[in-house]
Length: 430
Image (cartoon, rainbow, N blue to C red; front, side, top):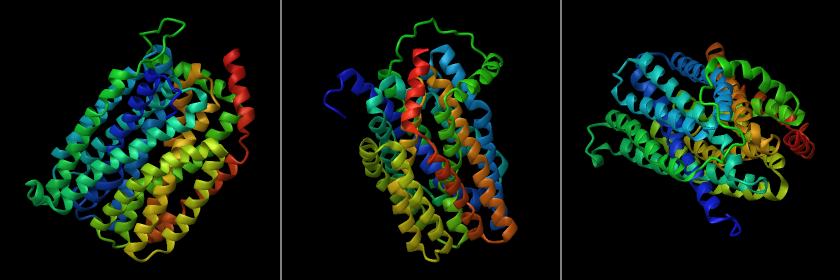
């Protein structure tokens, strides 16, 4: 971070970024790593490969649908109450409890596992509504790319470190005094809950929301928030470039999230060993840490929009490679490539959107941002799962993701960033 940044703001920025370190353990160990593996081999034991893939895709879609319905409401509540941090910690607590409870789910009880998983995602993704909106509270607009990238970089590093420990637990359970791999996976879920709770403390202690010009409305409820949702959509429509970017984001982030959530399942469907797939995910995390920081610098130099465009081209080529791959080493190669761009496209998307919206309404507009991303994620996992089921080929399912990147890239080309910044500034003056 720049040496010219005041100490108090630098501390707030690092503390904010450490929440990404905290909750990324859920994204890596649970969503991308062990839940798909354990679901197939333990909770959905006895199902066919395509049937378990379809059910996992449906579970991811259901979780995303809940976030779609609640994210804009949570954003309005964050704005109107003036307590983004309180909302963030409340939803983080939900995610922690649901994740720890996966330890208790018995073999074959796939429905309970899915229920806990869905509500865990709700805590994870719902908390990110408030977390993303806090970016404009702790960073100047000239710092957005770097601070956003710092959050994702720490997320990759923190999530990767715990995931490395979890992989070691599964590969060598006796080293940790565990009976077998199944017990190791269950304790991995507990470790995520503890990690998430522990590293949420910096944002609680050192991030302070700026004082509001008007007193916060403590009694903001869901009914009132639903009424204001219509006003939020009108606000977005008054910012045409922010609206156009959200459409683009809707498509391409669906492709990104679908690859994250379905990659391990895809590898298992091709007959690759689970241990090799988990190692590949670890590679993605370790590569993602420096790559996200590098994308922050690239965004500073060429602009967030251009950096996102580079990442989307890489993703398109990656999908083609995944469609044709036959050996486990290729999965490792893909893991490296995805690690180079995954954190970058996420960080630059958040930073670019922050440039296109007024600070005063960051909560509600980031609610729509998260809603659009998760509404897209309803489509992707279902598309992959059911295209694979209908065609009888998981390769056809993964190839369908290419369409999402193509449409998203085309819409991104139509976003005029300079015009969008003028629209946001004019709205703030008004």
